[in-house]
Amino acid sequence: MRAVVQRVSKASVTVDDKIVGKINKGLLVLLGVGEDDDEKDLQYMVDKITGLRIFQDDNDKMNLSLLDVKGELLVVSQFTLYGDVRKGKRPSFSTSAKPEIGQMYYEKFVQKTKELGIITETGEFGAHMDVNLINDGPVTILLDSKKTF
Image 1 (cartoon, rainbow, N blue to C red):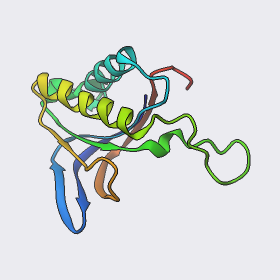
Image 2: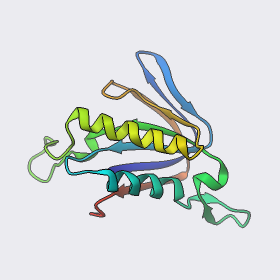
Image 3: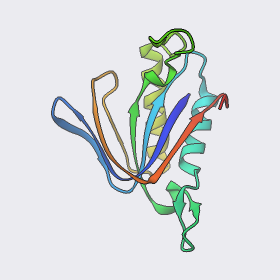
Image 4: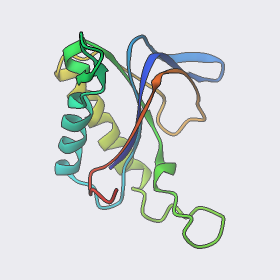
């Protein structure tokens, strides 16, 4: 699995001019699922994202996690994170999961974060979405469950 994680003061996602998910202070997560991902990748991403120490403590150091600050989460499916442009200029998505598998892991990710007590909002899987955010910092982290970067 791959994710772009952005610390936000607020974020929302709109489908057909209707807001389908919206959060205040927390994390916007663009989440992509790869063809070889499994339950270990899922759990790694849940643990890593909810535990990232990227919120300021009382000494203005990035030392607190989403759980520590009781932040919110907006999760948006993003298969294009598996776009491979090493050859040519048109991305190949051959290593992204098939839509039914991607949706299953996306929904499992959301469910697991909700089980941790995190207010979790979502986009709409497979839809054309407009994502609005105020990136706080800015702080943006790239994650890959296979640790390729």
